[in-house]
Image (cartoon, rainbow, N blue to C red; front, side):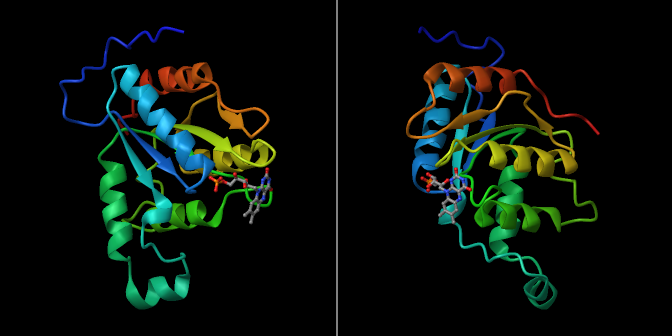
Amino acid sequence: MATRPLRSFKMTSTKNDLLVITASNGENLKLAKRFVQASKELGAKSKLVDLTELDLPLYNPRTHEASGIPPTALDLTQEMGSVSRWVICAPEYNGSIPPVLTSAIAWLSVQGDNFRHLFNGRPIAIASFSGGGGMELLLSLRIQLTHLGAQVVGRQLMSNSSKPATDEAIQDLLRRLLQMTKLDL
Ligand SMILES: Cc1cc2nc3c(=O)[nH]c(=O)nc-3n(C[C@H](O)[C@H](O)[C@H](O)COP(=O)(O)O)c2cc1C
């Protein structure tokens, strides 16, 4: 299927239109790379963030009290805050959110005086490659992100080895996301 670029996105801009975040370095990293490629085909600029590459400690209130916010968490907040929209690709673990992702979200939510600050009004698309497709991960993640005030795209992407993500499904999710803007709250 030919890709129809979205008119409102100009490749001449230096600013990224979205961040594609992966919470695992296997099939979800491959899926995240497909989102980066598809966004380019739609005329949007994106950047990949692989949470498994970051030296981010597990969120632990004792560590937080003793040492404050780790520099990696401060850098991640800066990077994520500078881009309006996110795509999150994550595997389902034990019917829910994998620890790499939920721990990162915890660190992002304990900075500043409003735990919702980084998420509030932000458009986010969610996608998964999981053993069984990832429906429970997507439901859990939608609940967590909505609690934090995000605008989670109504459609979502489930995939596994017997039902891989199609290019059309990736493009459809991106088109929806790219037409959404962060709320000015
Ligand atoms: C600790 C653990 C728990 C898992 N739990 C589930 C699960 O509840 N549902 C599921 O569909 N797959 C589950 N899986 C399988 C992963 O979702 C699957 O291997 C996925 O491909 C991992 O992502 P990756 O390939 O990007 O590393 C689990 C894997 C691990 C390591």
